[in-house]
Length: 273
Ligand code: PAF
Image (cartoon, rainbow, N blue to C red):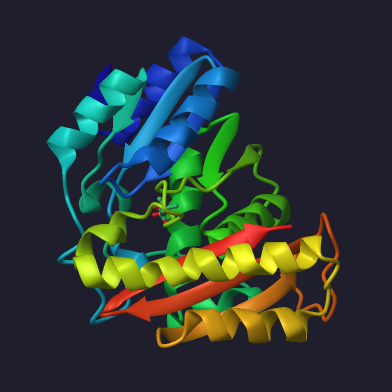
């Protein structure tokens, strides 16, 4: 496994290899969720690149950039065991200059849900993912469905900027008790982690209601909000896959999203119906 920090070195190496490249962009602190992205990439591609870069531009002032878990050595070992070919580990200066051209998330889709509480967050995500795509030039890029809005906006960016990469959406990985895996779960105390299980429980309840042919968004949101009590809920939304609010669930075209604050940790989860 190669570990490369230099942008030009990586570009030259990948060009020379002439292989089908699968790319998994990450901010490190790798867990089984990332491994499922790598595994899928390995099934479909000839050369796997994982980037590890805690992107400063997607953190707002006062957010947890400084305390974001950094585990480069453990992450490298995980990548090696998973059969990754190249870990791209740039420094901030390799990615950003002092006077930057940057991307702007779309005014509507980029500033609802996560974008409403974290205005500007998706500008940073799109800017860095676009840069990483330009560096790695992957054939396929893998993103978790757990960050559904991020996935939606990256897919939109690829379409609107005519970027030649296929975005692959990968199912959320959960602990056996239902908690969706996230690098931020390590901030949860035992008690908070227990409380956080209400998030997946509320989504399971939504899916059960749909199985019982209850399709009204209002009814489902009400039942979910009951289960989520007393967590501090940021939002419970029922949207089409294009991120438009829908009053009635359409099987095959619905995503139900939840955001809660557990202690000071913001947790996201969703279910695709
Ligand atoms: O999902 C993440 O880890 C990050 O938002 C990403 C896509 C690597 C961009 O920094």
